[in-house]
Length: 134
Image (cartoon, rainbow, N blue to C red):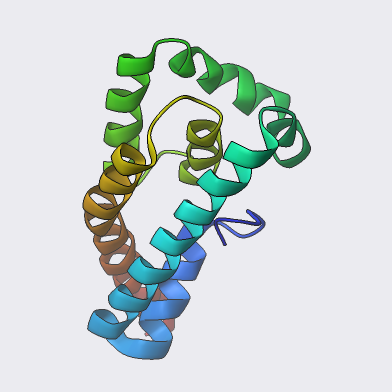
């Protein structure tokens, strides 16, 4: 879902929790999303900025490209966005791959920032799902 951003990430989190329960659904979502985020970074690192235009709208690219202009500022904003469950994470992972952010820093941000957002998505969407099916 991260490498080929077709479906919203929240939908994948909901399906994981429905199929595997809250604990294993979270674990599978976390592993899958982190692996996909690392792959997106690698693809963008190898393909560069032209890839962004193929996968995302020009509006999204323009909105967040300013973040990438300042190296230290981008890393802080990226970490905050990954931690919060409302940012366009897929796009930001690709954008990060086009910056000079190191693999080590990127990986640390993903591995430490994703659990909170995934847990919020998983728990929140599970509660909504349960209200719908009742």
